[in-house]
Length: 341
Image 1 (cartoon, rainbow, N blue to C red):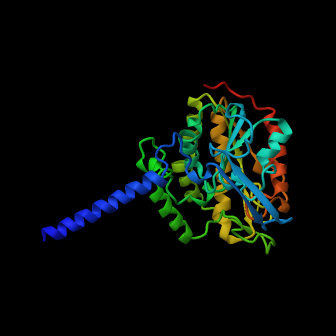
Image 2 (spheres, rainbow, N blue to C red; image 1 turned 90 degrees about the vertical axis):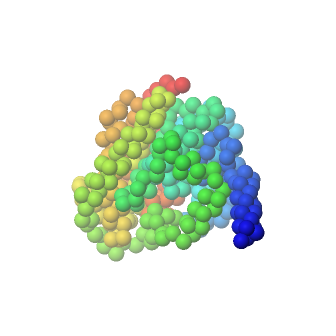
Image 3 (cartoon, helix red, strand yellow; image 1 turned 120 degrees about the vertical axis):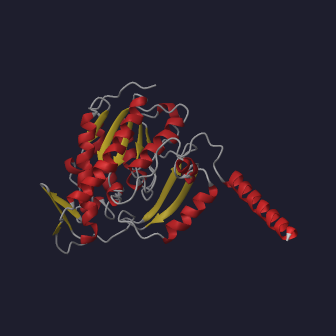
């Protein structure tokens, strides 16, 4: 019996040693800053896109800090950092044609793209505190947050832990084993409403008025979204930074609004569309409460979009990105920047 226990102990020790070695080799434990998805560092690839016309090759580049669109400009020259999910990242739009690139071309401002697919509001806080605020020399005039489309899918899901002492928050971006498990889970996870080519919006079979579940939406807004948004603004206020909150639209073939009524072309997105509208209203309310440090841009309501601006429910074509970039360029002209550390 003692010999069997000894063999078990030796094998367990070898397994533990192997796990530690794998973590030290493939993990990100010694990085001074850590985005939620470490694969964005020093990344460059070219690929074929057939999501919109004309089909063609796209090029995607991230620098050593994990930022897109900065190119040869030093970190200290960055004027705006944009934070959001896939509609901010725009992985299927080539370099030079993202809405951040359009802002740069229109205004001369240096815009860093810190978008990461799937990012919801609680992750914005993690991204700012654990990644962007820790990049040496990064002191932008503005932090522009694209919010809504991912959060609208999550009214029944718990928010990601954002406390500084959260072991999960520390572990997520650094552990190689954790990241490997997440990738396996993602392969078998059910499809999200907000995903590239996630639903066919090419034709409208007839509009359906959304019957709002006011209690469910209100509970999500008051218990989760509103307090988390206030926390995000406070994270920037500590650094005396200017926050810009921007609402996100949906493909007009899929969602339209008439006053307080929301209509969808598919019942599948009813809850999502209704929650997105509630999120947009909440962003306006919270930002106006913090008017000194926060500026609200209701792009979803102020800018008229066409079906050709999208290649699915929410993701933009280069034409849509150009429209957004030019619109935001005009709005940025009237927003003063606060001083910061």
